[in-house]
Image (cartoon, rainbow, N blue to C red):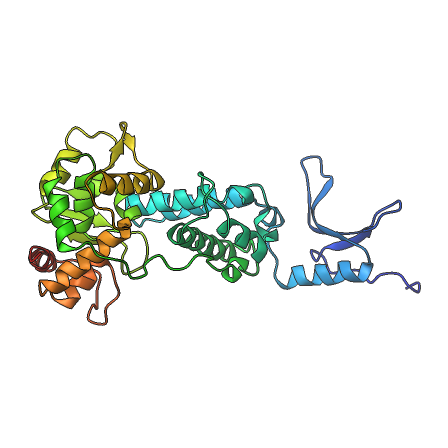
Length: 355
């Protein structure tokens, strides 16, 4: 064999070809060589490299763990479509509409990544999305970032399973906003009396629904009306944690009329409507503050305070701690299953009616 001539690779191994002309990366790695309909050879280009040594290393790495060249070029949006179909349309498992809505909402925040090849995304790309802004130009909330982070994690897992990536870089992108489930300021007894005295004023009923159900603001706003069973007298939903998802909360007798009135003639599949359309979380936050001020409650409160009021009222009424954990979606060592039996629901109903 003439000195300096490259050793011939085994059949099917691939090849390194030096391209003509002056190029910065003249050594092209070709794999999966095959014949087209005219019996001309065609192949996939693994990449181009500055030196033959770099090209041979890349070819050896490819043969150590072959993968689809075409899939390595798949964009973020293309991967999302495949992931969404695999999970929600072909997976065989039934997911709540709130879970589907949560995934779609998280994807909408990822627009800067839509056209980027997924295999080339790194931690900084994912961090940039998490530290981004919502449609109103405000920093993303903790819950929004949590949903986005969860989507990244699921897409990474899907990409790893399909040999589209070798490493999930989104794991190194941390949520940048402090946990929004921090202790709040429950409504006082006097403030509760004020709310009930003004229950017929616009949007006051929504505050009372939150106080007597314990849902997080986004959980109830994004909850489809189809997940509110008036016959059984229950809400079903939850978006945040494994303990909080798909939980059942009985509708307290004090707020049942409010829920029935809001669902009557409602064709938009949402509990809260504004001008005939489902209200957004940001719009509700503004209405919440405006409503409290309009009835004379000047102390600072957030919708999350309704959740803390709910917990406080249950505790003061002597409700069982396991029931409280289940109602608000917190993990409990006493809970060994997330399956709700008829007995479980009746126990939760008894607990909630103690308020």
